[in-house]
Amino acid sequence: MKKASARHILVDSKEACESLKSQIEKGADFTQVAKEHSKCPSGKSGGSLGEFTPGQMVKEFDAVVFSAELNKVQGPVKTDFGYHLIEVTSRNDN
Image 1: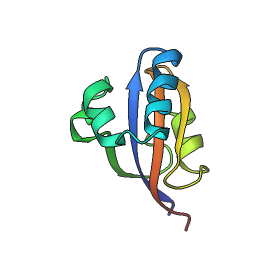
Image 2: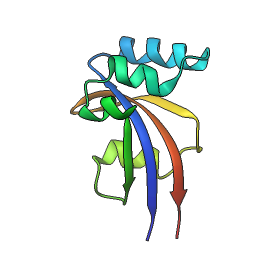
Image 3: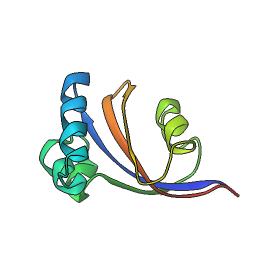
C-alpha cells in the first residue's frame, strides 16, 4: 500500500504562502517557519504530519504528496483550509 510522510505550513493567503516559500528557498529552516507561521496544530511540531495513506488528506493535498519530488517545497496548494506549503519527506509507492 502507498504511504507517505510529509510536513506542511498552513496560512490564510496565497501571498503569505509565497513569501514563506521564498524565505525557505533562501535558507530559512522549514521547521522554524512552520512553528512561527502555520495555522495548523502540526506547526508546533515543525509541520510534521507523520505517515499517511492516500485518502487520509484532502484530495488537493494527496495529489501533491503522492506525485511531487521528495524533499522539495511545493506550493502554494489551495484547499478548503487555506494555502499550504508541502514537503514530502518520504514515500513508498508499493
